[in-house]
Length: 504
Image (tube, one colour):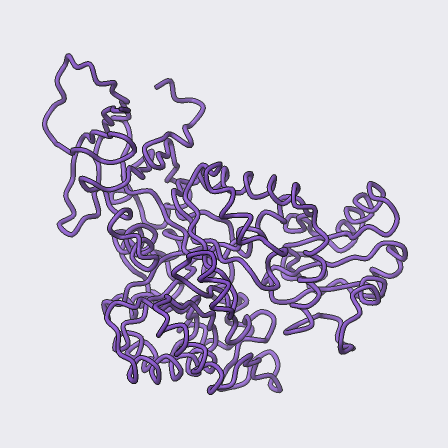
C-alpha cells in the first residue's frame, strides 16, 4: 500500500464549497484524507513537504490533437522563423538529410509572424524542391501549402488552382501524407508531447483522434499505449462510424467533426462576409438533414457527441440539429459538446443553456489572435472581434465550459489559457481567476464525464494535484502568464514532474 502526506502552503480544493486545506493524505493513487491542522511530528507515513507552494487540482486540457501534436515533434517547426528566406534554408537542410523522394513535412507556418507577411508560393517550393514532395501545414491547421511534386503524388480527385489548400482538398492532402509516417516515430512524438504536458501541470487530456488529422490506426494505438503514458488520455474518436466507436467500448464520438472550418483560413461559416474578403462566407461541411440523422443515431445509442463549430452560421446549423434531436428524444445529462464556439450570437448562448450542452473552448486563441489590429479584427472587423470567445456571457448563463488548447494550434499550456481568459481583450467578456482555473479543472472534468473522479481535490478522488510557485489569487491578473510556474505535478498519486531545483 502506497501512502504519503502532501504538505502545501495552501490547497485550494475547487470543490462546491471551495474548501482550503494544508495537507492531503494520498493512498494508492487516491485522496484518502485532507486537513488543516498540523501533521504529527512523528509518523511512519512519508511526508512530501511542498509547503512553499500552492496546490490546485491537476489541469485538464479538453481539446488536444495528440497525434498531430506528436507529428509536430518529428516535423520541421516553422513558428520561430522570421522570413521566407530562412524557412527555405531550413527546408533545404531537411531535404539534404533525406533520401530523394521522401516527404518534407513542416508545420506551424504563420504568415503574420514573418517579415514578408505572405504565404510561401508553390513556385518557390518547386524551385527548391523538385525531387522532394513538400507539405507545409499552416498555423490554423485547416489549410496547407504543397509543391507540384507533392500534388502529383497525392492524385487529388479534383484539382485546385488555389495556392492555399483549404476544405476537403486540405483534409485529403494531410490524411494521405500522415499515412506515410512511421508508427515508431509517432509513438516517440506522443510520449514527448505527454511529458511536456505533464511539465505544464496537465494530468489529463482529451485526445481528439481519427479522420484526416490522425495517421491510420491512431485511436487503437493510443488505447494500446495507455499504461505507458505519464498522464491520462481520454479518447474522442473523430469518426461518424458508430460501430467503430462501440467496437472500442468508447462512450464518446466526435471531437473535431467539422461543421465548418477556421477563421484564419476563411472557412469558418459566417452569416456576414469576412471583412478581409467580401466574397467569402466560409464553408459548411454538413447539410441539416444528414447532421440531424447522425446526431439522432449517436444520441439514441447513448454516446456523448462532440462537433467542431466556429462561425455563427456553423454554430447555428449545429444548434438547430442538436435542438431537433434533443427535443424529440429528451435525455438527461447527455453533455453533448460543441468544440470552439468562437463566434456565437446571444441567442446561441441561450440555446446552449436550454439544451444542456457543454462547451470546449480555447481562451489562448485570444492571446495569439485577439485584440486591436490582430487576426480576429482584421478578418472579422472590430464589432465581431469584440464578440469572439464571449466567456463572461457564457459563464453568466451557468453553462459548463471546459478549457483546451487545440494543440498543436496553440501549446498545451493551461496557465496560458487561464491568463488569456482573465485578460480577455474585451473587458466585458473576461472572467475571474477562479472561473478560469475551474475552466481547466472541474469544468474540463465535467464535460468529459470525469467529475466524479477528477477536477477537484476531495476525499476519494484520484490524486491529480499540481503545485504552483505563487498563489494565483494574490498576483496581478495581467502577470499570470509571467508569474505562475508549475513546480510539481502529481498524476494518479505519482509525481510525473518536479522542478529540477527542488530537493524534496
